[in-house]
Image (tube, rainbow, N blue to C red; front, top):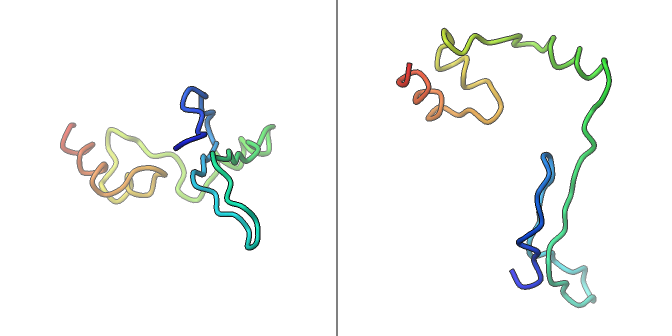
Length: 85
């Protein structure tokens, strides 16, 4: 982590890669790189997100299987949501 700026704020959607491997024959770099993908903007992206194959899920009535389909929600988190209700 030498050369890594720990004070830099990370923006949503960024990926921080630490320990970048050098190409063969080149000296190793110290530090990190930040990879970010442009966020989709406009009505086309909104329409695409709202009309997905799974549609909207009611979090108050969803089953473990339905919650498990959401990004970032695995079986353990889905079970915890059900238990918390």
